[in-house]
Length: 275
Image 1 (cartoon, rainbow, N blue to C red):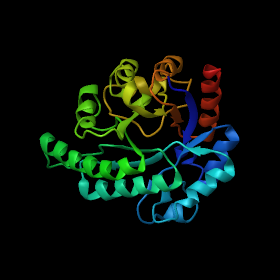
Image 2: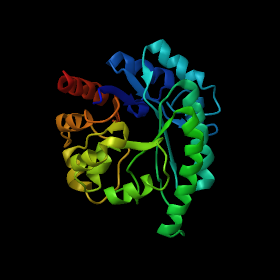
Image 3: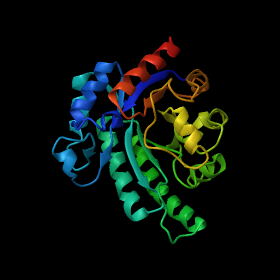
């Protein structure tokens, strides 16, 4: 049975206008054991100027490794979301993210199917996604890196649609990054869904949904960037923890929230349930 470990997605400092290293130090200060950095291609003005937490994959990957070692935290995975339906973007991007992850010791690269092209059919999209996942799996398998597919866009809003993508490629390195908030907002029962897929779970985005957002958006959207503080929304975290303890490996709950204050409240609440 899996142990539950606590981490935070670096999105919690998205509005602080601070660099990656500041976010890692803040996560450690709050008591998190793991962080989930976000990576991007090329160069981006705010990150280069030190006003945003995302790291360019043109940087030395040891920038991430060294910052985490200095702060005393580990890396649960990389946030490398890219549209699988657009192989001209996602194929090389994800392969580079896998190589980047392997060099810094990140066990998981998280992504989703992304917005689809406006001219392709559903069948064509699945052929395109199969191509990308097959190419990425060939890079991930020899490096021992898992691909964590997340429910977020048009095809993964239901368990059946999600499973269809998961099964496009037969690889032990393609697993699930379960997003508690996205699965709920799509209109599904997140606990039943999690029960059904816990055997392939490799990572979890611990995202709570505020009651106001639930009432306004549930069943109308396929996901949301970040949630509220864990324990202040609609998600039953005790039930979620109990299900995840059945996973075949240890699972990091990577908190996805939008502020430092929410991250602090989240770890206090989750730790109280893990005692």
